Image (cartoon, rainbow, N blue to C red):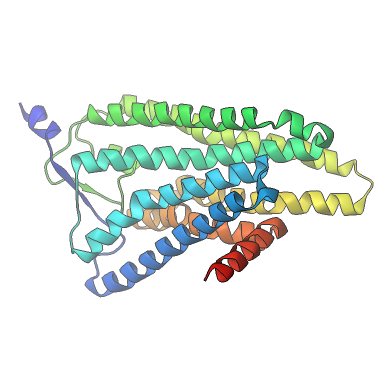
Length: 311
């Protein structure tokens, strides 16, 4: 009977980033600013790609998907945090928490998968330039994205179904600013062995495999570039990979640095580290791709000029 009552817990409490009342207005303004910049920046990237026929290529098809995922990624966590700060509340419903876990895992996993697919695209473009349009045809690009969605859909769904089997004590506080599956498993009142086993399995599927694919693709790219005799060709190839490598380093550097750091067990360090890859990385991605990419800058300039003419 006790376990049954625990399983019917109706809400959790999110610890947040700080309990200091004086910091709440500052945190609200800061995260609202970062959220708006992220949404606006990624929307501009999407609009620029859709409106410019020069960018209707596999590379920018994947980039537009990444921008869409980044908007959804940050929208999974930040709006609820802003509402809680504004209402001086820490609660999140049990159902709302499971929904947040589900969509957070989907968009976090899709970020990693899309970065892997983009690395493969760069490999084909640099190592097999004459066959690029044949290999990276629209059908394959669509299938790659659909396959990523299919895998992450089932992995996230299994996580949520396993979490539903756990029992929780009334008034459970999650030491984070959003519902993350790792933190939820720590506060469960029942055995989490199966959950932890699947967590390790999903980490391999969503983390180790994609990162290994990226490393493998770039090892072949570097090997191919070393054989090039033209310095101009090497520079052009490196410049096309620069933006992608910057995003990969930012995303995986912050997320892996968080989970493999000795301080990751402390809730404060964990929350601050999570801000880096859940909020800061999606915000910086549009700037990285627009500032380092002449094609995107040109498309944004043409989009701006058309907007000015319409006004």
